[in-house]
Image (cartoon, rainbow, N blue to C red; front, side, top):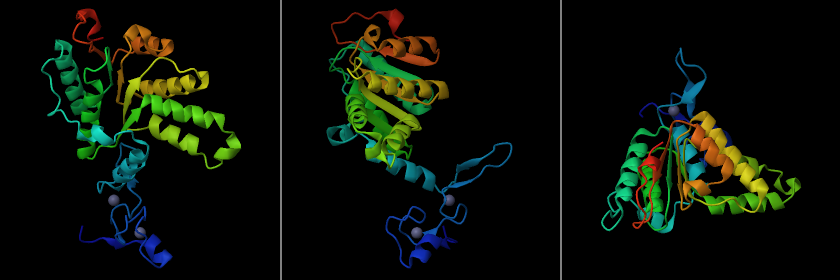
Length: 254
Ligand SMILES: [Zn+2]
Ligand SMILES: [Zn+2]
């Protein structure tokens, strides 16, 4: 943009801060939001909305990247390099469902069933595609997240004066798009289970786009989550079993 304004924060600091949240280290800010990232909505909408300059999204994406489990080989996963040959017919269904979910980003998608049939690949492919399009998406590995919850639980509140726990928990809970990979059976820490349930229930209530992959059979999902998912009409359950499973048509879509 040609009419950018000088960054007042960096001016006050007397030098350009490379990590400046307003000018992102450029020394100049967007003339519309002046480096705040948000502007007042035009009626009838109310409140603040992200500025078209995209600063709010870039900030959000950076914060999400810090807690993301999307790394290593997962960064290579795409829809193009997902191999359908040799996989059960259900893999095609799962593939199509993930592509559709990535395009529409409404509701929930739950991929469950046998191991080794590419659920994580599809989840990572969705995340990579969305990130390449500048959508703030968070890819979380559930066992890792539960470990982190447990570890935080074992520390006293005095050790967490900065509120790291609350901030990180809210970041995951409020992520505009959340992909939870590898949901397992209940962990042995009831507190961690409770936190995970609260998080998922909140996202169901708020209708925030969420994808879950799990090697469990749906019947073995943590009880409360299973019944909650059963209640909500907009979640799609795709049974993606190992090749030797027989397709149970009643379970494909709810
Ligand atoms: Zn600045
Ligand atoms: Zn702006």
